[in-house]
Amino acid sequence: MKFTIESIAGVVIHKGEGVSRKEFITANKAKLAETNLTGVNLEGVNLNGAELYGADLRDAYLTRTDLREADLRGADLSYANLTRASLRMANLSRADLRGADFTGANLRYANLSRADLRGANLRDADLKEANFSGANLAGVDLDGIVGLPAHVKQIKGSNHTVIMVGKDNVSIGCHRNSLTWWLENYRKVGEKEKYTPEEIAEYGVHLSALSAL
Image (tube, rainbow, N blue to C red; front, side, top):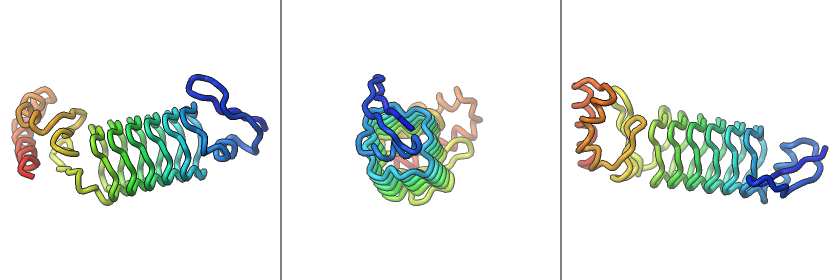
């Protein structure tokens, strides 16, 4: 069968034959930068070391896909399914990972610096030694995670979890700001989000605890 792979701009950059689209993409994994792979099904394929920086992988199905050491810098993986995928040592710096499902994924030593993870599901993922510097973790599900990196602090409150990735990057629910800002404004935010007075006081204690660190 004949297949093509287009750039995000719609230009054909790979064309040829293969048994399946999965096989064709895998055969060209070293040259997939800035390609349009929206909604593609690459379940279980070997993309170890693939060059995917800037690629459009929105809504892609990547369950159990081998993406170890893949270059995904600036890639759009929003709402992609990465359940049980292997992303060990992958470079996801500045990637758009909003709403992506990383349930049970291996993210050991992955670079997620400045990645947008708003609303992503990291439940049961292995995050040992992963780099989240500057990452947006607002609304992230961290339940059951393995090896939370030392630079990431979390406090489970009675409502939302407080996640701190440095003093300038603190998230509570869908809100993200600096620790100093939170200490000055947590009451206003709590009232706006209809927290009870007891809950507001609780989060004040949590933020003070993080400040003491």
